[in-house]
Image 1 (cartoon, rainbow, N blue to C red):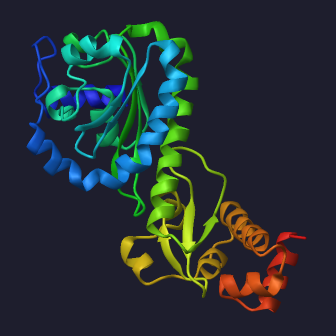
Image 2 (image 1 turned 120 degrees about the vertical axis):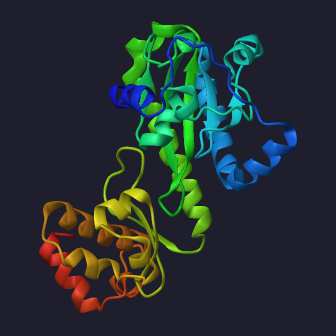
Length: 292
């Protein structure tokens, strides 16, 4: 991922790594206008940012949130870090788009849609070499890029040994923000998890009383190969799962049925009604999948 970004910086962005750089920072009025679209993200993310900061502060890390264009929306930092933040441009309204900043945590993360760790010397620009950066994408209720969550430090490689742990912790926080955005968007709908959560997105769907899918996270869309148009047609979840006999789909179907039964405290009739199938069909599927 870092190598791909460096190639873009050289061949597509034409950035000189030795050239000094300072982030453009929006004025207060500009920031209020641009950040308006990210209000749901900030509302869902701020509790997670505060929790992350409490965990990461002893390691000298601060927490940042950026929008889909790599503009910094919010920051959790200690007062002792303020001077460093001003010097490095880690300020509300600062633009960290990879096309101008070069390889960096939030800019490269929103560009590629994957978590990234950058240690000392892995940022494109030499002036950013003291930074260590961990970033994970956050997706909205429609599976689109909502922004990036970032842990940053000014001590270069001091956090490299803990990088896998820190990146995993950050990714889980990103999934919790996605979960909050999804549940807020589809409040009152039944939620079903198609498989164990992994990566940056959990495979969560929202269904109506007839078992029709009305919403799906990015991971669920990827698993089911759903497009926006397909979700607008509200596919029946179990019918979609039944059309594929691969192990992952059978596992997803079993997960849906177990979740439906747990939601109804084991009442098969109510679970079948919620899934949009007959009780006989649900019993048949339970036998086939070994669901007690």
